[in-house]
Length: 322
Image (tube, rainbow, N blue to C red; front, top):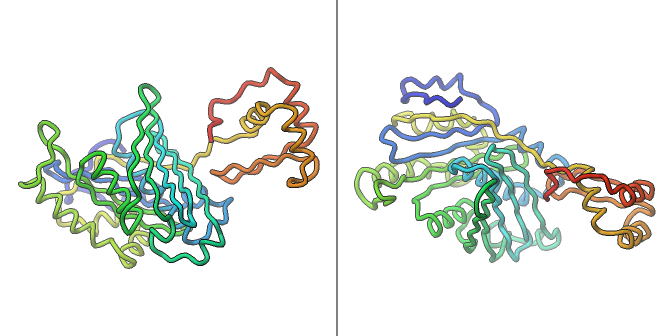
């Protein structure tokens, strides 16, 4: 749905999609804009082949929601990569989202360290960096690095907006292994790209921010997971002149394939592949490759490997990047 959906009086909340969509919205004066989403079946599909511990699954889900919300605010064709790299028991979170809202994600962690870790963001991720990379289909690649700071993943992403874009931003995220949800609101710049620190724009953002802040904490996060994105918008902003601009589907799509993995193996050369087939660390006579993103397992035996090495006519598919 791309047409605008009126003010609070004209929005038909019951007929809005209730599933894995994101909602772009603003308020009547246009000085504050936002995006809201809640993913259920899409999120479950992304992690169904992984056995993420609860703490890992929750943080990765929040990272997915945060990355999709960020993409929804950008006007470009390409993909965004959001990465949290730290020294804690959860050493890496990576989310890749395309401009048409297809995502994939992965996490790396240490089970032993995680078992004795606390629940705070610093205890789980440790000190590290948030790395945001934007890879447009045309034009220059952009990358920004900021320290991971704050008491939550949402606060860490807010820190990026403050340091890199200077846009007042409020972000709330909530996730478990069943559902991930999030809402982002921003104060818009005015003439000349200036974001005023006072006046109607600042007051409007302060008002909206206070309503969004009611979702911070365990009770608010539980509400975000429990109700649909349209219902949450209605609960928060039923007294405001809310305008929904767009409703867009979010999907999980990894893009890995047996052909792509085979092309990667071919590049290793015969000696390394023969050594892997003979290794005691893998099943005898087999090479096993598991995709870090979707968890798909690809097996190649000696016959498969020989075919890869002798068939130089195989062309790599376009979507083989991991």
